[in-house]
Length: 568
Ligand SMILES: C[S@@+](CC[C@H](N)C(=O)[O-])C[C@H]1O[C@@H](n2cnc3c(N)ncnc32)[C@H](O)[C@@H]1O
Image 1 (cartoon, rainbow, N blue to C red):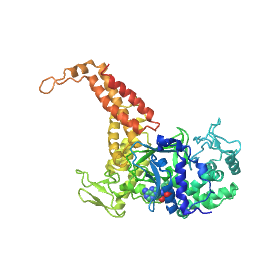
Image 2: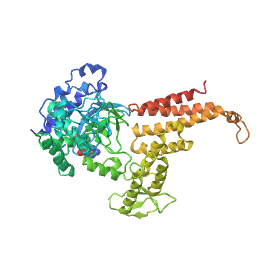
Image 3: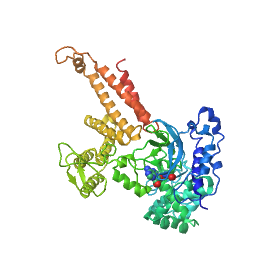
Image 4: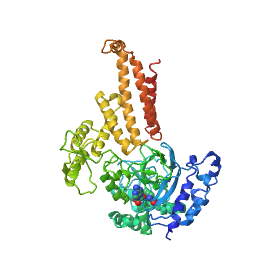
């Protein structure tokens, strides 16, 4: 039975209500008791499973009326609601002003499965197993040995997979195929076992009709539907499989459960965050639970956005990625601005005006010439694209942990495209990470200086395209802190062992030969540590939900000790 247009928004609204238990902060203490009276997700959603074939969801009058009658006290603390626009479809919007750093919501995954295309992965806990694995005794699918505590590989799943004939074969292509079909298989089983979950999945956007006309549609029909029917004996309506696969490809998140277990998961509320190339939220996963936090202030009514593309990618790259994977053209502020919010990460340095270092910004029309903003020099789009492809090819051949090669490639790309270009920035970020992979005490003075320079360059770009409390900024600040704290530590050791340096400092004379105010080396280190301590506290706030927060805690300890040195 086809789901009517009118009932899709309320399904998702009721799903939002059902997340009350995971989000107690949505309710003020005076209405806390009411949380218990909200029906559970399962109670509230009790209709049959139905697929919806597009995202054209309109608010109906009945729905507006039902909102009007809703208990407003329950909503007063909640930061979000679901809104609709003919351009964006449904989207999460701020229900009240949200402050940067505020936790917006937490959500458990509805479906969790290995990533399509991944190698042997334990079906119970999603740990990557490499090639040395043992198959499940019943179906032959990869599982941990000794058995892990993961619960995802159920008896029912096992009995269906056993029809694949994997047992005893360790057939790698078949294992990879299993990772492709497992997502729709698990989702299908969930919709059959839990009609409420099925209804939410049915209400999510799948872009099914458009996808059916694309190669992905043919793949799903021939491979996934084909295997379900012919090898697994499942009598299944192919539209349901197309819808489920489309729901995953349109909405799923890559999630890490811990250091070794990773997969793909569906978070129906998280899925309602629309895309922005300069998003106002950041999300983290902890034991599979998604935590979404505001990275900038979000005004009431503003969309609450997530990014579906890497932020360090130029507009043309992001546009191509979004069109290919999510089937829409982004028209956000960053995409409409050829300078990309002043970052110039798609602009190319002009070769004709070396002195002024003029930049050629991408033309509005994709086929037009690129024109230097300083000297008016024109270069054809084809020539620029060839240049960018050459730079990109140079970086893709390179090992990302070899710092010397990274430096050479970064300099080469900077000469070709300019230091502000996104490929140069990717190189800078790779180099920053490669240097910091070493224990900080083993990093040379020269490389510590490099980390400082790279982080400053990247922080400048981050403040434009990924501003506020973004993880990117947090990681850059952390690297910078590690480098500066280590430099300070080396200075402290040097001064403790070199009495001459101290005496010279103490007898400090200015150019006129007068004694200047004496700043003892210890006081100087203490002062610098106090400045860094402030940055470390900002970093701690940004990475509050990140596993890297333990590294920030170490920095806080170290800097705290150095800041106190003068007093002792
Ligand atoms: C993860 S879903 C987001 C929720 C979706 N709008 C809905 O109604 O269920 C992704 C889809 O939303 C739409 N979308 C998301 N961000 C958009 C944006 N910035 N501009 C236009 N469409 C967008 C696209 O159709 C995309 O395929």
